[in-house]
Image (cartoon, rainbow over all chains, first blue to last red; front, side, top):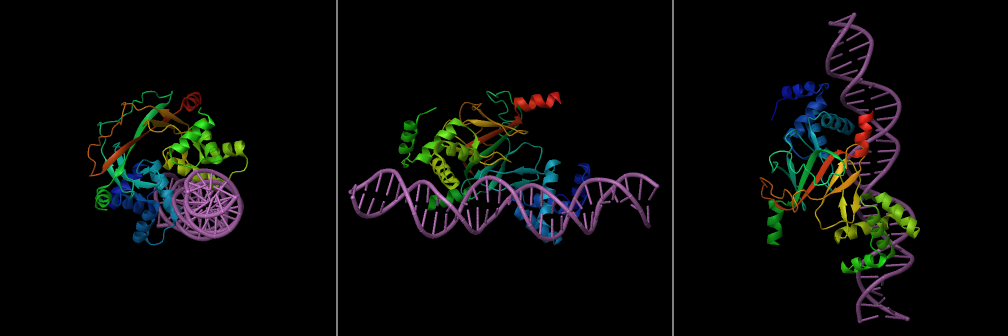
Amino acid sequence: MPTASEFERLLRGASLRVTAPRIAVLSAVHAHPHADTDSIIGVVRQNLGAVSHQAVYDVLRALTGAGLLRRIEPQGSVARYEARVGDNHHHVVCRSCGAIADVDCAVGHAPCLDASDDHGFVIDEAEVIYWGSCPECTTAAKSS
Amino acid sequence: MPTASEFERLLRGASLRVTAPRIAVLSAVHAHPHADTDSIIGVVRQNLGAVSHQAVYDVLRALTGAGLLRRIEPQGSVARYEARVGDNHHHVVCRSCGAIADVDCAVGHAPCLDASDDHGFVIDEAEVIYWGSCPECTTAAKSS
DNA sequence: GTCTTTTCTGGAATCAGTCAAGTTAACGAA
DNA sequence: TTCGTTAACTTGACTGATTCCAGAAAAGAC
């Protein structure tokens, strides 16, 4: 878990102004990977007191745009954010409880990036989502 | 493009009652792959006259649940539906205009299904979304 | 043809996310 | 240190996709 001054460096590195809400959001996402916007707002308010939800939405968008955060939104779920960026990893999503876990790229680098027929599209990223059942839900389903 | 009686067989095969809105929705999705709900409502109304949006939402959910349609929702886009099911193909999405095209599975069958570390998840499907730029947008970007 | 079950209608509600206008604060320059 | 510019934050209303609800209608079974 990086410190506040490390978050500050991250922000400056992205030519973003350093503000308390931004530090708090960065810190919240680092502490709670795959959290949705609402949870992030909750955590940020615990640390800073009153912060408008609008500010959090703005900050999330700014940080995502700057590449400091990554936004993921599996089907049927609201937007979630994580701080692991730049390493092209993927996600497993539990169909029954929605839990998300990280999965390192199976192929090692840019997986499956060669579409068999790309219809003339210039492809720059392949995003993989694995669907299945998390350990808890698998156990629960068996015992029922 | 299947005929109305073929759609009827499909519905009966899935033990679903045969109704005009269902045929119309099936037909609309076959005719307009990757269409969003609103467009589908539009097409259905062109064919049938007044149909409530609720009916279309219900039908789409019923057909998706029965496996006759597949629902896809890339980030930043509303839900879209397509009629190609059961062949595990993937999609390319244009970052600038949102266009979607089908891509056959590069690996031939269940691609990348072997996550390197699955965290105990039981994985049953791998969904791949390729991000890039469609031919039109690529050309437009170059000429500007 | 009658009965039961499923589907359709219309309207209202929900909820994540966005817009707009005004205020505040960060930060580079004087 | 102070000032001015400009990005960031606050407040509050709003949008738009989707869902919920209750009553009316239709489909399929007997």
